[in-house]
Image (cartoon, rainbow, N blue to C red; front, side, top):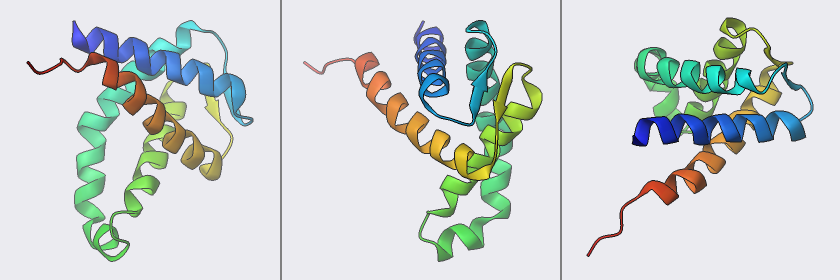
Length: 115
């Protein structure tokens, strides 16, 4: 149940960011759900490989290179999903940062309270 809620929260965040950010186009609201699913799949499969191969750059930049990896994941998702387009790397970087912030806020509602 949590995974479905996380996909819906991510889709809601993608929909909101596409509405407010110039350079991010979303053809249909239904595409936001597909983008959320593709982002989840890419984060599980491609991101660990990118992190492994760019580990020296990540260490030298004290982890800031992970933002670049997230932007690359966004650009890959825009390549695979019809109806979702990101105009460039810097927009993808801003989109990924804002998406991470929104996801952390929305996912905080899913945490169970400790007794």
